[in-house]
Image (tube, rainbow, N blue to C red; front, side, top):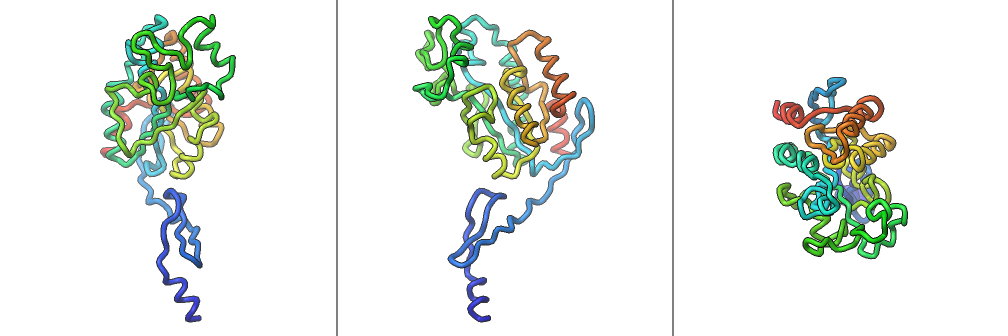
Length: 263
């Protein structure tokens, strides 16, 4: 009996990423994972009023990168009007600090390809370089020689207006969906996050495919409309909003989230 009590009273050291963490010593592994204290809020959306737990929430900011949002980036280089891709910047500059203050993690999910493109198919390369002669994935931009959507390059970096903080989390992706062949799902499960806010560009492409995959994986999905944009035609954005509300989750705006947090 004495030996058992002595073993139990030895200090336990944390092991893992809370809340998916153990406490261990040489004899014991405490796998109870103490629960996180709930932080319920009430959030209006365009279809229903949500009762959600802020302690289980995070925001995914998708592809707010120079290649998509900067005048010297890839989209602008091929002649796309990037004004709609810049629209989410100002509301995000207000929303992200409010979420950080409320201890809601900010996760940046960005294109960040390997320089050798070894995991990129010909079909995906074709999307960015349909003639084979243009400036596609991994090629240098004429304006500054930055490699298109390559991890570590200026082209793949988050736009300067949106400041990242050391506690933010960065996930490189290699397809339109941020879940395909990335650690995003594992990170979210380790953090105990089940409610995901979505922001970024393009709404009908990378944001939508990531949100759909999140829904398929069992996450609760909320699109933040004013923090999301697309360079596609307006009907593509409207179709995205319709499909999110009809099939995959909910739609709200940054003002509603901030009001719900500060109440």
